[in-house]
Length: 67
Image 1 (cartoon, rainbow, N blue to C red):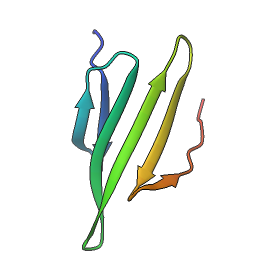
Image 2 (image 1 turned 90 degrees about the vertical axis):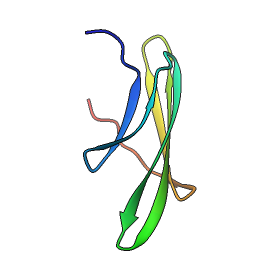
Image 3 (image 1 turned 60 degrees about the vertical axis):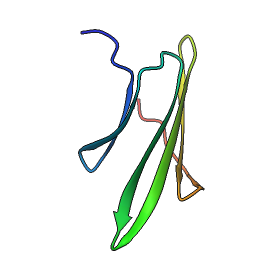
């Protein structure tokens, strides 16, 4: 197994993939009824940490780190 980059799955569907080693900007969408909502995920990595920010329709979504 090697490095395959970052992937964004929504409802088990691959919507974006980036081969970057350090940072990735992933975009996708989901549906709320008949309304399509855009998703943007920013993944930042450094030596020992990763940070992710998530936006749905340009509004930030709070995330909790799970160990």
